[in-house]
Image (cartoon, rainbow, N blue to C red; front, side, top):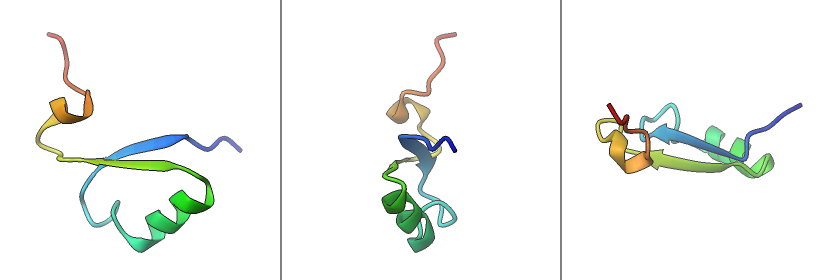
Length: 48
């Protein structure tokens, strides 16, 4: 089974909770958080 090395998500409670924290620790996943309304903060901006 493939498991990602890292995950990028916003600070919503369904992503930032104890269950996600436990899963991230168990599978050694680095969970990064970013403000959803500022995509440039997480290198997701487009070059249009």
